[in-house]
Amino acid sequence: MHTPKWGAGLFVVLYLLIFPYLLSAQIRHDTLGEVEVLADRVRLSGQFQQLDHIGEDRILRTPALFLSDVLTWNTHWFVLSYGPGMVSTAAHRGNNAEQVRVFWNGIPLNHPALGMLDLSLIPAILFDDISLLNAGASAQMGNGSLGGNIFLANRQASEGLTLRQHTSMGSFGYVQQMSAASYRQGRFSGSTKILWQRSDNDYTFQPLFGEPRPLPNAAYRQMHIMQEAQVELDSRNRLQAAFWYLDKQTQIPPTITGNQRQRAGLEDRQAVASLGWHNQRSAENGRLLQYAFVYADQWYTQDFPDIESFNPARSHYVEHHQYGKVLGWRYKLGQQFTYSSSPGPNLSEGNFQRWFGVFGELGNTFFNRWDLEFSARQEWVNGFDPPLAIAFLNRYHFDEHWKMVARVSTNYRIPTLNQLYWAPVGNPDLLPENNLLGELSLEYISTRSQLQLTAYTSHTRNYIQWRPSIGPFWSATNLKEVRAYGLELSHDYLFLQTRNAQLGSNLRGAYGRAFGVSDDDPFAGLQLIYQPIYRYSHSVYWKNQKWDVSLRCRHVSEMFGLLDHHPSAQIPGVWLFGSAIQHNFSVGKGILRASVHLENLTNQMYQLQLGRPMPGFHFFVGLNYDFPT
Image 1: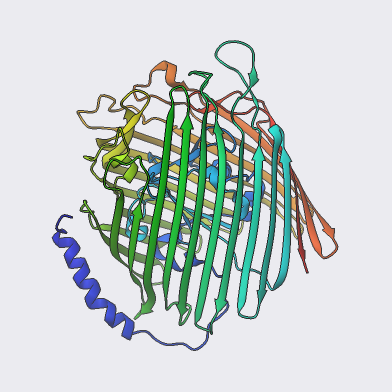
Image 2: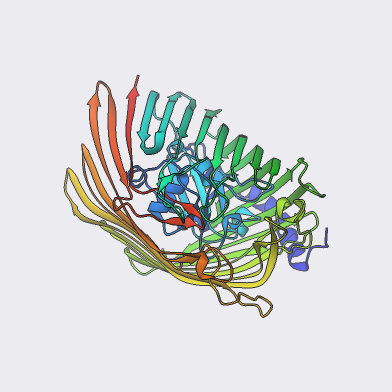
């Protein structure tokens, strides 16, 4: 481990000097109002007021089979996908899948050894609350939060016992069943969810030669068990426990540009367990202590050529932080420790990483118009010397409708165990990624309209990119510099709102360039692979107490699957359309919701990853029954 820089030492000294004072300066309150219990609500203060919340209505209007579907139709992010239910990853603002982090109740879900998360492992129906932070957040969330961040959580159970049964079926042999129960009585609340899903995924595609035929070797099945519980010890203290187990088998079809005899398969098995204590002395003062253990195994097999890869990972995660308000200043101070290992046979050496970090946030509001917030974090990682990560936010409210937000942050990412040591193409000489991000937003909010226009610029040194290496293998290498810039637009508007009905729209659009600029990069100036320059999604909906009808469209511009932008690697842009119809029935004490989703209405033949065809027109029907007992 290298000796920390003087800036890191100064931060630690100030932290240790200020921390005891803040502990003693807290004002005690004996009453505690009822709050919505979401672990992330405690963490995601300050900078995280910029979260983009995806509401339940927006989720239900999309075929929310997976988290990837929610992102595809409700954000300006780009999701790279092999096909429905198959491997899917997110890209945002020039960042790749390893630079995007996903959290569940504050627990990082990215595979500790691989550094990424397959979004098809996350059925969206398991969650009530899905939120995005479009910017990097290393100062708040630590190593790896260089690109966007996704936060998953569930609302507190309502009083009494509520049962839910969800059944959906669709094209290509798709079936999903979820049974859920939530309970709240006195000081105890909890929920249990069990989900099972399968699909043959044998949709028709057009090969390079010959007649259209069904996609081979593309079936998948998965099972999930999720348990969450909370006990209120008294008016100030709560214990929270959560457990999530998943098992998924995915067949991977051959590419339409490669050997059609090739067969591959992926099995993911993962368990996440956490235990947390939340002490809340008032709405603004409290502390959180949480421990989590992540167990992740992944098996990949392939023939022609024969490849077998086993990627196990074990990760221990501990966080403690205190938050409060003193003399008008909001603060948060804490520590975090993570130990990750990969005891499998594929790593040539160095199969663990451990890092310890201290962090703090400070903010205040002046004249009821001007918010200033500052965050800083220093981490120590074996074998590396992470920089001091900082973030500064300046928010000014012109009036009750208009505000401007400026944000500057430094972010970083340590190379993953897989990138460093995976045999035979690991690169132990990789350098950490360092990023400087700036963004400026103009926002407007009224009773009928929410508008946000954001301009951003990003500069990343030592950007890690996978490039062809030995035979069929790719290996990670550093690009000296990558720059990105762009514009993002979000607009939610109600054309009509009466006592019983609404007519509205949700629009998300983005323009973004991301390219290498170093002299030694032979592809400098070319857009990074799988980074479309334009993304656009728009939905129009009408709803009343019984009906919810929507029409959606989405556009992804052309992109390239090879670094040199060879014409054979061009992936054309595509316009896609979909619609949804939902109707609510009162059945006894409960509500039955019937839904129909029609996807790719114009039956477009397209792909989002080179050689991976996507389905034409397809549909899903669902029945969801909520009934209190």
